[in-house]
Image (tube, rainbow, N blue to C red; front, side, top):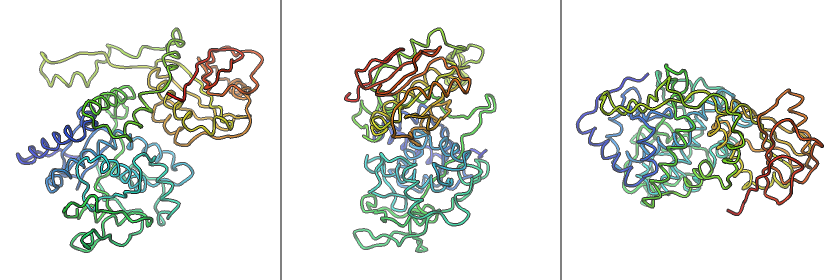
Length: 478
């Protein structure tokens, strides 16, 4: 654990200005920041970092930046938490690969930084230092995994890189800070409009770790600023991403639960809308999680009544975050029940991966948004996600919203004909009897002659009628 440090009066005032700047220029990140992020000043790291809950920062480093740059850093770390990058990096590290590529935490962090910084620059949030990773041609809508794959294919990391990491920051947990090793070769320094080359006093080019594709451009972000020597020396990355800490009381990751996460996103979106400062790329991201286009999530909830397992709330363990709001003052302490157990038992979800569904990414994205809603709201013990066209192509098991996102990122497989029979045969062969099965399909294909001994909900964009079970119409035009 890093050692917290005391702030000077000047540094306290500086952080107050940063918070006000977030509220003024980045209401989305400000709302999420106040709701779920904990400030953690420490001199055990050189610059800044996050583990999905804490915003670690070296107060001396933050003080060395111009105020808009410090606001940019705070928004950047909050952005990592919003996108759940620490959790995703831990997941890939455990797998040892990302998609079909070897895992490199450094490369993932570079890709994440490029996407985050591009979004902040486009949204006019703070000020991007000329030494920090930035490429105007990288869209903030881009998936980190897609950019990771693109950068890897352009130039794989050198020998020794891409091996399974011991933590998200390349082997050092929060108690062992380390300098990140740039995973890419060094491009020539860029020139700004005045002909000056970006770099520190030693001549080190900024973004030294950036891949040798289109060189980053700094004209939009320079505005007379001086380079950041520490970022320039580390390839343009000014922060680190650590694995989520484990809460010693619960033994679980100390990050927002799915419910807390969705609630924080909703509050942040509301604040951004109210101020008219809601970046399009964030709206698209949040809508995929919070604003599904159809109502079958509520339908599914009603159908699951009677199949609910243990209660989601319990007075046996009060909500610790609410207790903390009282800060030791009994008059201000609010006691609310904590959460425990699961909501539903087992669910099966079948994705019709035949050509008509497989080639409709909008429909699949809408469905995955709803699937995330199922997992977050009903909290099942386990969900089987079966990809099937004329045969079962792949089966994923998920238990959390993060794992649902991983399935979405990997994409479905198939593209052939259609048969609804194989998924039911697979479940029977495996001895799996789910509470409910949800089937996304166009309903063009043969089905088993008899209904299985569990509820089946057919989700379809068509007006076809299934042979049995419930049906929900998904509207892709909304």
